[in-house]
Length: 118
Image 1 (cartoon, rainbow, N blue to C red):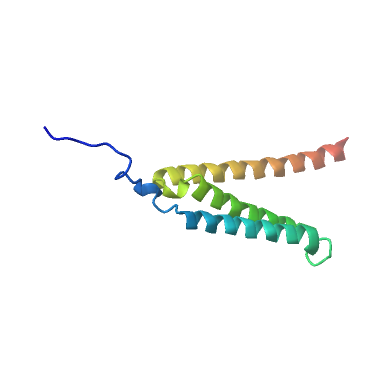
Image 2: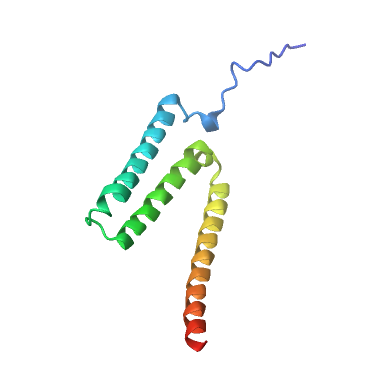
């Protein structure tokens, strides 16, 4: 009979091999940098009149989406999942955002027309 030793030592998880301490610190640094940029915009650029509020809002949304990507991709390990799962989650997320935007547009339209007719 052959003997099989089942230890944790030779069983590396190849799908998570890319998450080293250096990669974690790099992603944490990127997230901190983005957060710092958001604070600069909120506490200096908008109050100082360098950026209008509506432009600042679009910048916040873009930076928040970038931060969400890094969190989901690296800390929730979606980057190391199979392509099918990545696509399913991404398409679902896009549809959810699309429907939220549609509902906000419709709500604004209804609010405008209901206030005119009352």
